[in-house]
Length: 142
Image (cartoon, rainbow, N blue to C red; front, side):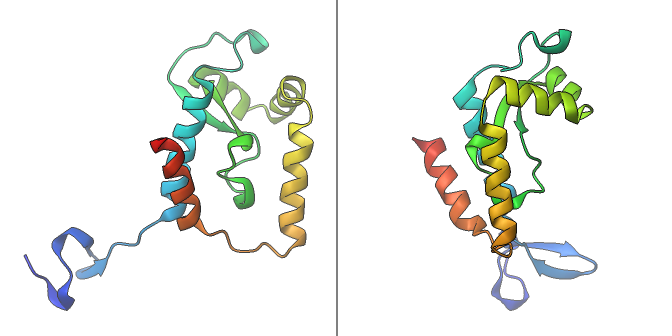
């Protein structure tokens, strides 16, 4: 059904009593694809046996440096696959998380931290989330 402005009902939503165009959130789409790429890459919880936590729950993508670090948010090297139990355990224990990452993946913590620092030193250039989404989409399709 046509709506004012020539938009179709498929790309509009009702919001605050007016028709508004849906905003495409490429960062969210890239993040979802990133999670799929990481979980497919690893295929299992990488923290099996760590800290006497029994593996349980679905596999989840766990960021080494949190999603707030936009420069490396969807970098595959910045994430590993954990079961829900290990993800929950490490989320509440950042020191244990850092120790586990440093012990399990020597050099990765420092390398990622260096990338984050370089991004800040460069003035936090804008991330092209549409391009990042397209890159990850191609990996999922491959």
